[in-house]
Length: 457
Image (cartoon, rainbow, N blue to C red):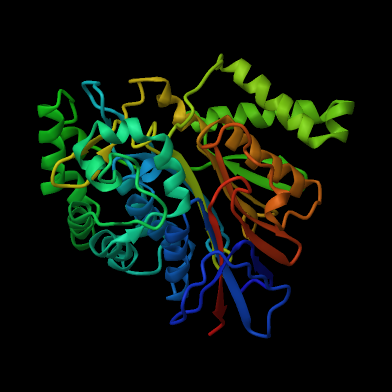
């Protein structure tokens, strides 16, 4: 059955199958006509979000949309979501009465070097095979088409490029894509083509994730790593798995909150953050001032982890999807720095993530904070979202969750707290208050929330 909720797409666009996109407009629905419901997607990069919306409009579910968004991000936002990176997703499926975590962080090779062993393709492949409704080829093909035929640089991507010029200049592949004739980063609206990446995506589309880990693409990655002093081997790639575990569950107010498990660094930090938030809210000051409580909890958590300073850009992003049947997905991925290692494997278009132990950027995975909150395991989510990129992103998603648990309406971008002084920390969420849900991109960024009306069959 369809869950009876009205939905609002905030600072986003309306997409109906067969209709044109109006990216950047504001669309909202305070109520729905009989028999009609909607689905929502949100993220940092508008073209990728519109791809997820299109998949929902074609009958896909939330997992299909999230998978399509990830592969689209590998084309439109590779600074944070390349094929060479890793991440974490949480899936909440009330129809199946399950909530599951998928762990696929980029890891050090057996012989550690400069490059991480990629986890994203394996992770999204396992998740989509477990919960998706559409054929695999259908969720990968939009990204392949964009890479082949070209996609404009969005404002979101241009903002990241402007600060990543030094990384881009050191790699021939990245420089050819993102620097103009004068050697400066290309600007918003410039169309970028990446035929090598399109070929890699075509192989993944036709032969599944295995094409990336044991096929010709894997061979090129291993050969490149060897020639450039890296240590990723064919055995490292072939052995890449995606963990499927039960997420950590805590209770805040009347909601059950699903966080990354303590088996991953992200879960450990998120657990400490929420424990400290509970302590702060137990004080008289924290009980009256939620923002002050979150700030104290974040500072205390960083102190607990002995984190005094972090790079400006950890190369991460988060996104979420929720469909009309209540399935919800929250994902966060990272390259461990902008464009990761800054090295692109020749002939593949794949930029490799930085090895977690190679620098302070290896802490990026600790700040991946996908979260889903629901009243019961078999009820639709009250919140599906992710903080990513740094501790401020984690704190911002915690703030949104605490507000919902307090009974506040969180239905506009301004209801989220900006990630503030750290420009590449990010928070994106789908939040529900009563019978109304909204897609809320980070108020300090250039992302998109999208609503897709779906006609009940």
